[in-house]
Amino acid sequence: MHENFIDVVLDGQLVRALVDSGASLSVISETFRRQLKKLLFCSSQNFTFRVADGNHVKPLGTCILRVTMQNQTRPFEFTVYRSAAIMSFLAGIS
Image 1: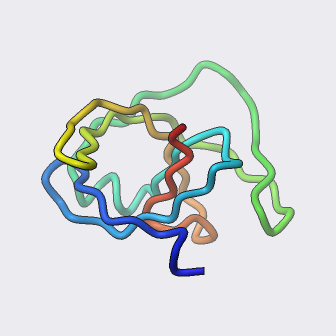
Image 2 (image 1 turned 180 degrees about the vertical axis):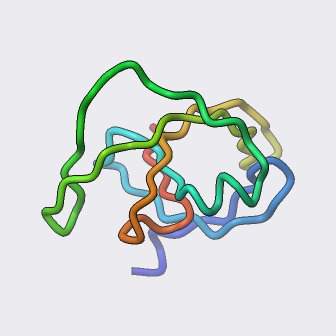
């Protein structure tokens, strides 16, 4: 399972990320968002997502992070969750 993890830099912080090619979103935890001191943008949409364990979770909103991989930096939108079931960072980047 370790081959599904990659090292990326998020806003200057090195992070070990789980890559899920089947994920429709890239997500971070609320705790990690606060640690990075990123603004939370509230969503006007009222929806929930079913996660891998079958539970449904509602996102808190989104934030924008600078992602650096292979010496290239690009901004990406991440969905923020409060749930402890969400690890610090999950990349659903295609």
